[in-house]
Image (cartoon, rainbow, N blue to C red):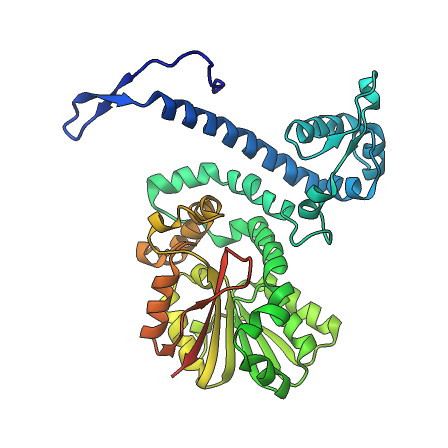
Length: 389
């Protein structure tokens, strides 16, 4: 275990051996304050990582939702309300308490009568419908990504990839994340960033969404704009089956889905609007996909691309609020999944491939684009509204 910082006066310097390029060693003087600071930081990282797993469990078991709806409650009553085993709930509550996620009332003399509650300010980020975003959904990333660690180490050594089919659980979390950030904002916030699109949808246009997943974004649009026609392409048969069934149940006659990639199509000048929300880099064929989008659009048609806000230079991403998480998703999922498809390092562009790089490629392949657009308070997403020349 890492030790807590000592109150004793630190030594003025420390020396450790470091290997140089020749294989010999030289003394490196360490700054004791920096050593202590980094040790403390590592301990906080370990604690926060552990808390993230417990937050994920609280989300999956319904503990947060139940606590948010109850007055201060004992572990026994909480376990009974959720239908869980009390001993596990008690230990989970202790973790949440020392992690400052939940609070207790004044301590009774009998510790079995301690009552716990979830402050409303915390519930706003850990439950549905009480705040801007349920961050507990995102906590699932850590435990799921950790389950790929052994395979990731093997990939580091072999340079091989991993089939995307092995990431189904991770993809479902990514879809839930996108539902909060994209689908819920699509009509009121994202599309108004480019003024003419909403009017065009109301009058009636042909729209294609590539790598559409189970079609949530298209459902949002098809329900609102009855005069427009929508089609979604996705390379995963399971996603397409779910989307088709949902469209039939909803009775949306202006919405269709196909199991295919745009690079497999022969459409030319067939669509007025083509969208791609966050999954361009998953194709492993970024250049060809953008080129086919350009060909499939009608003259003056629009390509709406959503991507992660990032620079192609990692040094410029150090202040990114979700930088470490996004790079980790890239290392553990996106790079191995795309390498399995292509076996070409240059095609595995990664999550943080860079808005500058994307913009350069978009303009090179026959689009005009004024640059990226953002939503207020959204530090993680950017939107490219590209017009076919």
